[in-house]
Each structure stands twice: as structure tokens, then as C-alpha cells.
Image 1 (cartoon, rainbow, N blue to C red):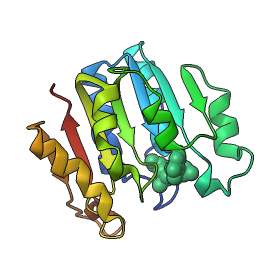
Image 2 (cartoon, protein in one colour):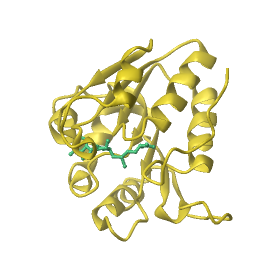
Image 3 (spheres, rainbow, N blue to C red):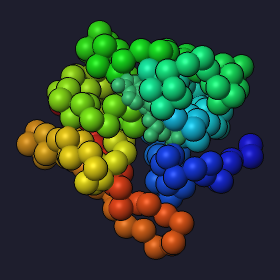
Length: 186
Ligand SMILES: C[S@@+](CC[C@H](N)C(=O)[O-])C[C@H]1O[C@@H](n2cnc3c(N)ncnc32)[C@H](O)[C@@H]1O
């Protein structure tokens, strides 16, 4: 397996945080993985590499194509559509998808979709994720999107173990934007 460690743009999650997500996935061995917000596809491919390594799992990736101009799939999506083990649900609004999903449906999450409003349906995210699911939320410490801090506030309120990674050590990192890791104890 050739894992791509070149981040295509600063729009994507940092490499160090991507490796954290990848390593957690390799150890947690999830069955049903949910990605909210495909963007550059950088993390989507990490998750597909994780499925390939684990030899188990299915990825559901959702997007409303907002960052893609609301248009037809670009080369990122066309490339992903040809891969195995991925179910792309798009275009769809995050809120609509989450509110219509079943309880405990997914057991691993990377959330990097609706940066303005998703802090309004944190309880719904916790509902659709299974007990003890690992969940990652990007940009939680980004002052441009203050509502995302609700993920940490509510994880703390419900005593769900969590840690917010914010440290950069290189000039080419934007880790200060924050990657929140939460275990969905219920
Ligand atoms: C910052 S990008 C995700 C970056 C991705 N994690 C990566 O590493 O490349 C955010 C993505 O969420 C999508 N998005 C934004 N608002 C959304 C919404 N309300 N519902 C669904 N997807 C949304 C955008 O189209 C975009 O693809």
C-alpha cells in the first residue's frame, strides 16, 4: 500500500492529524465509517487505505458539493467513484443526512462538513454513532467557526472522553485549527 502523505491543499486536514485518524482506524477496526465533507479527498483516501489494510469496513462519504461550486463531480469525486468500499451520498445537506440516519448506525467518524451550522446538531451526531465509536471533528479550535466548539462543550458535558489536538511544529502545518477526538461513551 502506498499511503499518500502529500496534502493537496490547506483546505484539507493536516497530515499529522490524518495519520492520527488513520492509526486509530487501523487499531479500532471499524465496520461502518462515516465521513462528512469530502473536500480534496485527502482523508477519504486515508480512510479507504485503512479499510484496505484492515480488510474490513465500508465508508460512507457525504457532501453537498458546496466547496465544489455545487456542480457535477470534479476529478476527486470521479476518482473516488471508481473505488471499492465507498458509498458516496451526494449532493446532500449534512443536516438532512444526519437527522435521517438511524441510531448507532456508524462506528467511526470524520466530521469536516458544515462549518457554520453543524454545532447545532451535535446530539444527533452522538445519536447516530455507536457506543464507544471513535469520532474526529476538524476545525473545532478555528476561531472562524466558533459553533464547532459545541462538539467539545457537549462531549465534556456528557463525560465523553475527548482530546483537542492544536499543536503545530512546522511552518507548513495548520494544526491550531484543531482536531477533536471523542469516544462516544453512552
Ligand atoms: C473543508 S472541506 C473538507 C476537507 C476534507 N476533510 C479534506 O481533508 O480534504 C469541507 C467539505 O464539506 C462540504 N460541505 C460544506 N458544507 C456542507 C453541508 N452543509 N453539507 C454537506 N457538505 C458540506 C464541502 O463541499 C467540502 O467538500
